[in-house]
Image (cartoon, rainbow, N blue to C red):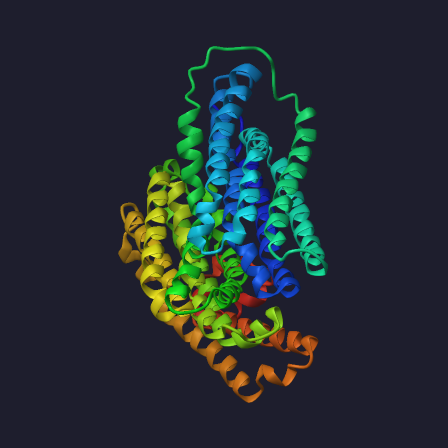
Length: 527
């Protein structure tokens, strides 16, 4: 029997969720000043290496620690100690073997990858990015041990510190590069920032570990298979966190060649890629907000609990999907309408507004995809979700190859939407084995569409009367204008959802000011 009580497990999951949200907000937010400092060309260079750096981060935060924590739980349940020769060394060797192989292949094949991307100047940046994998085993091992012992604080602190170090160094590098140096040094600086951020996280974890006494040199005969959990479980669980990252990787490999086929010259194609990448931090922020409820609900959705109390689990599934859908739809529609002012506010001009407006629809599909994937993983469908994401990446590749040479940036946007919708459809089909697809009809579709119409009508009317261009000479004025419209749109959307009965009273009771909000519910739903 595990000695971890449910309240402590839920508390630990909450700590990791908060740390993850903070880190993701930092990760999305710093890209705006990065683009402002370096321009679209510098942003393009950074975004070409970011998917590689992102893979290393996901492995060190989610994949490998989750696999190791599973091993630690199994070992401690058998009343065994975590032995240096029987546990730490074998696990570390397997981790280093996997990450070392990725480093060797990536470092040696960097010229080939750069050739596929259509930009040979990226070779040094790509090589430096793959070096980050060499630090991943050190960080992953400690995080997995702490998580397996239900000590989430250590992972949370190291995660936030890693992100702060990384963001700070990236911004400083950008400033230095713009003063003197090659623009392509931004890619190398970003890789160095990720490496040093991981080193900082390792030092924090090592300090905690030194005082934990969670190790011994006593050898025991091992009946555990380390490679299967680390390689399969560790890698498969990553795919739920890599949906958007995988799509960015496909764009990094195919967008420039596709634009060249469309007749765009190389210099212009690089700038266009940087403009298209403006959408990534906005998509990331929208998806984080919309899927955060799903991350919090994961501990409540398990196969064991589903077998014991299916109605309770179905309620969790319905609620998490409902909140994700409501937030994602509101965010996507709001961004589409306000994108000219958001583009000018964040990125200093309105280049690419048309394609980027289309791209914002990805927030809807990616958010609900991540939510349903989280539910499926809780029910034990880990490999299924991995296969669906891999298939979605293949769909994105095919759509890019077909649409970009014809429709350029709009083609890339449509390709991402189609791929994200494919992943969502696959998740819903698999979830249908335990949760009937017909039950989705119970979502408040009429109230949701009416609230969206009300919000969209307000924002469209205001922007038609008083457009963002009246604040073109003042970024502060543009900030006030955009924030005011965002708050007004969100307020109208939420109030209409309440008045039209989109929420039950028990759902409203978990919100701040719930006593006042319940008064806005229709009479039959206030109980």
